[in-house]
Image (cartoon, rainbow, N blue to C red; front, side, top):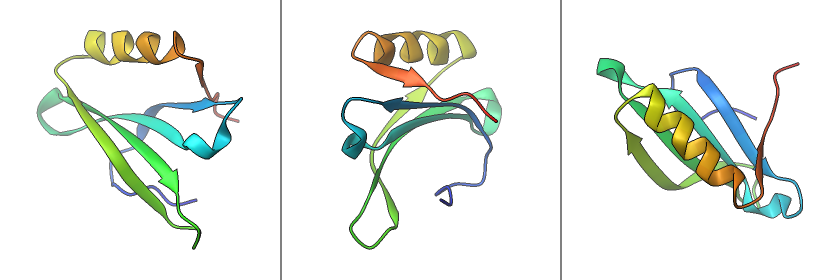
Length: 79
């Protein structure tokens, strides 16, 4: 599963009860800004970004992750 951007993810969240919802990926972009992308897998296997949120700081990224957690999204731990 290839990511749609170059920057490495700092957090990936999935909704275990509804995996068809895809995943949220939070990563650090240029100029110390952060972005969160909601990716959904298409029928052909490719991933498409359906929503993107710009975050101003690491604290905002953490708050967004907590917000998603309150709606059933959980963080995927790296192997």
